[in-house]
Image 1 (cartoon, chains in turn orange, brown, yellow, red):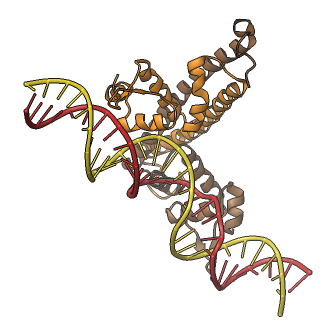
Image 2: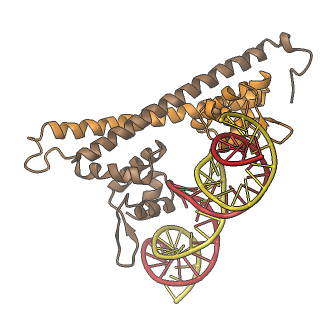
Image 3: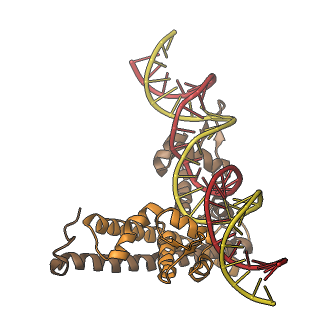
Length: 128
Length: 128
DNA sequence: CTTGATCCTCACGTCGACGTGAGGTTTTAG
DNA sequence: CTAAAACCTCACGTCGACGTGAGGATCAAG
């Protein structure tokens, strides 16, 4: 598989794939002329990498958990890494949920003051 | 209130507060000598700003929803902004949840292969 | 008055995941 | 054979939320 097809299949840019290789996240062998050749499995792998990136993991963090995907053998260090990242994601979800709820609350106030304009007609009564 | 106390109270750096002011997120009047003076309410305001930052909003996005906190009057544009950000946060929570579940799955595999070492006993089991 | 803590304004440094040419080779379709 | 499309390797640019001095003024306490 050539780089363009992998990029298309995984929904990332060609540049991104080269960057991933530079970071050691994907390996590609080369054609005699120097063009990268990927196995079909690369698409799924890249999608997983994207998932982790979008979850806020850094290249280095991803690099430390990816070997597990290949070997399915986890060192204690790797397992710990997985758990750490999971916990980090958990707390981030909690943060986001709080922000979400706060925004909902504000949206409620906004639409309320929009639908019942009578209460805010005179001055600032709906304040605080 | 002086900047140091606000920083301490809100759990951010002094530099961050100056940056927020530069971005128009907080206003502070000045003492005759030029030192910033904040109202007590600044602490809560900064906490809210932090909440939005941690939810992935940019300074510009925050700047567009903050006026609502002050006036409690939402223009349609502002309300839409609030809803857009809420939706963005929702999808981000979904992404994170997917990543979280995927990691859980992997952790399951990892601890499983660790608790039943019979299958991989001979070669690399206690590695590192 | 003095000293240490706190404050001020520039203004450059950082870090990470790519974007974006520049300049050149290779592959593919006709 | 030719032209377009796809690929290659440098290597600098980006963006945002601050960190980090430099160099100096101000404040609170003794």
